[in-house]
Image (cartoon, rainbow, N blue to C red):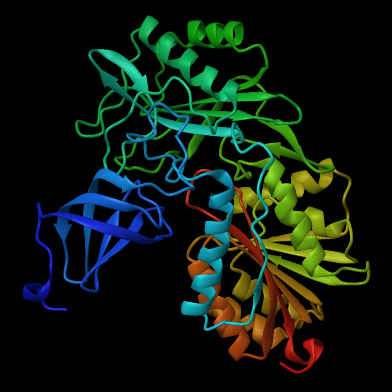
Length: 463
């Protein structure tokens, strides 16, 4: 579409009907075939909008007034919802969120993967979709000479000061408030990213949902932490469940939260929590699912789709700290986990030991290189489980899976688009996608996790 044929211009005011939701939770309207994205709107709504930006193929608009409201519209409970970028769809009722996430997965599988006949089950949601996050990591700034902390405003680096977040555990909110007050009491300056000065960059709070153990992490620009002794004593006094107070040092000009150096200021290096019957040690930088209740739902589904009888050898690619591996080990003959991050493998080995699980082996490296080496050693995987980052599986890993030909592949996905792309590759290589189960790990956000069961074509019968 040439620029001169774009049917709208910046500052145009229009009345449109919202037709769909994007995967980021914005409403989609069409004007003479031209797409406009309108945040805070819902499918079926008739709205007045103002165009704020136009590109060649699509544009963005701001909601002015809702003329006809969706029956699924909900009043956001969070007072800063419209400023904060943490949630995207609090204005959509929870039941409708679950339906929307199922539709999102189904649509993407069809559009990108060409998978029209795959069963996509209704999204598994939460009975109480609030206060579910066991980890808060918030940037710190200054406003009116005082330290503030909260999430960034949508599409900006401006911090929205926050006293409570309705998707965070209450104790994490308390930790953020306590640290802000202590920083102001002792004159600890917030980090200024433009001038690269100041002390406190981020506050990270971690809470064991089952154990109630709490960790407080102070991310600082340098090693020096003024009034360190007083700060530790105040945190201990005001956070009764605290088991660990940690300082992470990040001296770089970066938006990455953690630096390479971590020191325990007081207490333990780890807190603990459970997913089902499996106990996990969680350090300041460990990757650990932020919604343990739904993580169990997700992993139970992965276990079901793996269809283990106790005789199978399983490979868990992208195994992280061993969360899925240890779940699988309860039903498998042996599990081999591989992960590129050395610290994660150290945690995985520690977690296996913590639970007395001996039928697992963990290796550091790229899955696409380690798995052929295992194959050369005579290890034959009956089931391969993948849980990749948002970018999906590496092409080499998919080729490795196709060459190793396990009977079943279980794909745990945090991004429907890359899931669809990768399923298409596996289907073209002789596999059949049997079913996909969306799981709502992050209520009120636009994110959706899924578990897909994929089987060898000869195992599945005729396609």
